[in-house]
Every structure is written in structure tokens, then in C-alpha cells.
Image (cartoon, rainbow, N blue to C red; front, top):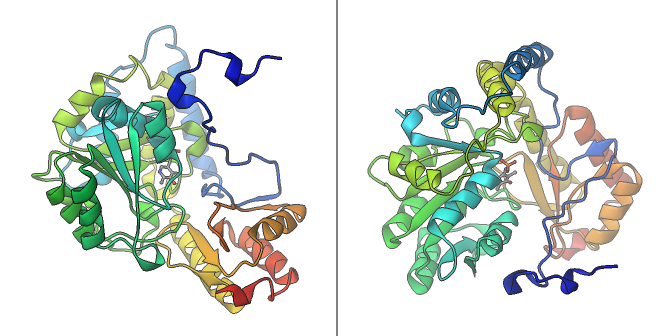
Length: 365
Ligand SMILES: *Cc1c(COP(=O)(O)O)cnc(C)c1O
């Protein structure tokens, strides 16, 4: 049998591990922050109709500039943005990889603030970019002073700010984003994958874009839009940034089918986002119930909750899994993360946890 170590693999990839959230078929999957509500039936029918039409011309390459999709995404984001400000890819992970291909690479560095989205360091390693792990303040917050101190000390070529932060759920203020931008000379990416789940009226980093040509705001259709399986992520930035990304993207990277499906979904934005309120409600309910059971949930502006006070995270994870409930052990001592599901899924999780006993390490914090 051939081992990885037998292959002439790049030296900097030796010993690395791939992204690996478990993909298990369980009745209640609350582990990767998906929208657990299926898309509404009438929208699904419309998407299928659009796909049926698109498939008739799949002998031809798709629109390399995905013009209609960029127009629709600009319209959805508002803030005076036009198609020239928008870039899209097969998930925001691909878009972030393209950002690193264009602005990172050997001899360059990416600063992030841990614990944060695990893909950042993996994308850095795949593109030969040095990963610099900055620290956060108490309770995973990130103040302008702390962030700026890291930028000044490490002088990174790129900074990735996750807002709200995954896996902690912590909101990030525009003050910190603006201060990081001022302090740095490189690219600043704000990953707003969960923006739609914040409290109504929460300002987006999109409002900071005018006059900041090194600022990029990343979004995805994977979470609020319930479109994770279709793979559509995007960003908004100065048009010069999208020109830079054209230098590294593969030609025709967004298939005609992906573009057709996304365009059809975006024609039904209100219906696609109809469950967001409900999910926010289940998230708030998780925080209440976890507190009642003696755990220590962290503030969350997203569709998941990180909670502490777990005596043995691995044992609790396994006990829940035995009941068909999959959540996430993200390796923070004493903590687990759970996605807000439908009312029934959230109930199943809370009831299972309660059966495990309130005592499960509630003293630990
Ligand atoms: C889920 C998630 C994404 C989305 O990735 P896609 O490739 O668009 O599915 C991006 N950033 C963060 C922080 C996430 O948690």
C-alpha cells in the first residue's frame, strides 16, 4: 500500500491534515452550521425549471463573467454596490482561496485571531502563505487595541476577520475592522458568512467599503440561504480587487448549472430567507436552555452556540451521537458547539442533553 510519505509531496504539506468535520448520516445533524430547513417547495420548482433550461446549452462554456449572478448579488447586498464590486465562486472557501492566490503566497503572511474558522489556516497552507495566529481578548472578543497591536507587531500581508466569529459566535464591531484597516497596509477580509443571523439592524462591514480599496467583505449562500450543497460564495470589494481575482480564477469556474440555480434562488430572496427569524429564535432558545442546564453559552450573533462547562466534551459528544444527534467538538477545552436547528431538532438536542444529567461538568466554569 502506498503511503502519503512515499509520494513526492510538497515539503510544506507533509504532516498536514485535511479539513474533516465528520459527515455522518444521523437524524439530527447540528454540526456544520447548515440551515437545517430545506428550501421552500415553490422555489425548488423554479430552480429545477431554470436548471432544465440551462442544461440545454451545457455543450457551451458558461458565462465566464457570471454577469447576471453578480448583478443579482449586488442588488441583494444594496449599499450602492454594482456588479463591478462583486466576485463569486464555488463557496466562499474558494473565494478566500483565490484571495490568497492573488495576495498571499510564498514569503507572505495571513493574520487571523484564534480560535477562528479552521479553513483559514488550511487555505494558507495550501497557497504557501504563512499563517499567523493572533490572540483574542476575554470571552473571545476582539478589541481595536488588541487587533491593532497584532497587526503592528506582525505586519501581515492579509488579515482575515470573521464577523461574527466561527466557532465562538462572537460579534465584531466596525470599530475593530476600521482600526485594523488603518493599521495595516495589506488586504483586510471580513468574513460575514453568518451576517443574516445578527440582530436586526446590525451594521455590515459593507458600509465601510467606500474609500477602502483594500477591504473585502465575504458572504455565502451556504448558511442563511440554505444553499450549502449548491456551493455559492461571494465577496464585495473595489472593482480593482475583482480584477486581481480574475488573474487566478480558473476560466469558467462557476458552472452554468450553478449560475442558473443561484440566479433562480436570488429571484426569491424573501422566501429563501424566511426561516432566518425562526433560526434566530431557536438560537436564543439554545442559549436559555443551556444556561438552565448549568452550562455556560457564549454570546452568539450567528446560527450556532458555543457553550462551556462541559466536563468531558468527547464523552458528551459521543453520548449525543448515540442518540442520533451530531454536534461539534472543536477542540476548545470544556466546550462544544451546536447549530440552531428546526424547533424539533433543537428540542431533541436539549432533551437529550438534559437526560445526560445537568451535572455534566456544570461546575467546570
Ligand atoms: C460556513 C462558513 C463559510 C462558508 O463556506 P462556503 O464555502 O461558502 O460553504 C465561510 N466562512 C465561515 C466562517 C464559515 O463558518
